[in-house]
Image (cartoon, rainbow, N blue to C red; front, side):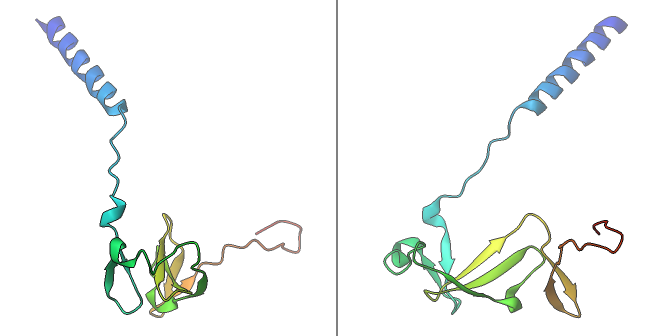
Length: 115
């Protein structure tokens, strides 16, 4: 009885580990459902804005610092739209209520070591 219980537990644990190795199914958004926002705050569906909005011709004019968050940057585009870029790591830090750019450049110290 004891050996049978131990064998049953072993099989259950092996099955749990094998199931954990299976890849999780990724959920993708349908591009037709994604809505783009222009600078006035109105939302435009892709079907309404396809004639006006051409990703290839839009150029980044400037970053909008007021819309920064820890993980995002917002840019003003040449066609009047704005673009939000979301990063997986923190790209800004908050200083006196304003989000500042993180400076991660290396400088050569006097003893020849980088810091």
